[in-house]
Amino acid sequence: MSSTPNTAGQCGLTFFGCMSASISHELKNALAIINEQAGLLEDLAYLLQKGGPVSPDRLQTLSGSILRQVKRADGIIKNMNRFAHSIDEPIKRVNLNDMLCFTASLSTRLASMKCVTLKTPSIENNLEIQTRPFFLENLIWICFKHIFNAREQPRDLNLSLENRESHAAICFQLEDETPTPIIFQHILEESGPILCLLHAELHENPENHLIYLMLPKKMDDGAMRTSIE
Amino acid sequence: MRVLLVDDEEELVSTLAERLTMRGIDAYWVTSGHAAIELIEHENFDVAILDIKLPRMSGLELKRHLSRRKPNLKFIFLTGHGSEQDYVEGSAEAGNPYYLVKPVQIEILMKKLTEIFQQEGNS
Image 1 (cartoon, rainbow over the protein chains, first blue to last red):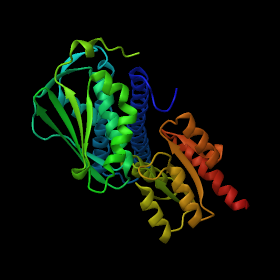
Image 2: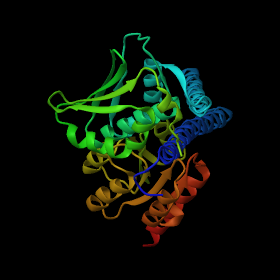
Image 3: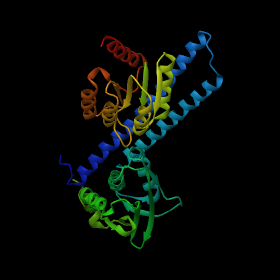
Image 4: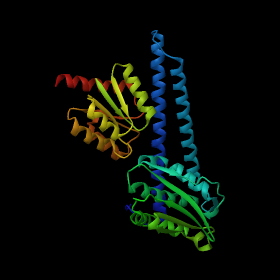
């Protein structure tokens, strides 16, 4: 497989693989922490048997921490399940805000590796569009990936939505120092087949460091019939 | 023996350090490569235990930085999984015996530390 996928199917497979690897890595981390904490409980129990000092507060903190990691792992698995089901219905109506927040949540680990904090829209937004959910997640993730890779300084990425007549737009507000045209070009190169499949467009506003993803609110017959390959 | 643990999962690294301390190891922990580089300027360690996948600076890059500053420092790598590439790179860099996959078994980690300690004593 070439490094730049030339069909939407190849893009999708790459995305699925990367996401699965990231999810499993995150799960493994949660399990590794639970493993250490269970081990520490064992150590403390041994210490108690020997008459050593173990404070009840220490045990309480430890059990709280284990519960937190179980909750974290449960959240990761819920996301994984929802992600796997996003392919069930090839085309459906989705709440764009919900879809954006979900993809941001899936990308949290990738973001934190690059010291990026994702700021999703804070206002409830009921903007709905008809689209291919899996490939929309893929497209948003490609945008994230190239924006994250641009710099390695701690920073925020602000996300917002705009309702524009026949289109909805996802806006990626980059920081002033970020080379918007270069990122825009990288996203365009990788996402070409998906933009085509979703009948979506990518726009940039370099002066304001903005990248827009324009998505049709309704897929026409041509878009519905487009083959994924 | 003084050990420095570096992993961005704070609860993992702090708990592991506590368990090593209970076993007589003088264990310190930090959650980033930059913090490790800063700490090593003022403190001496025998072994650094590094997560392979650290934010901003990978464990392998960190090893190169630390080795330049402290040539005698020994390393153990930890990984969440390992893609095949991680494994090949990590093993080659660390030497196969000093590459551990999470979740870590404390007895195995202690065995590795003891081996390093004995090698140090013999050299």
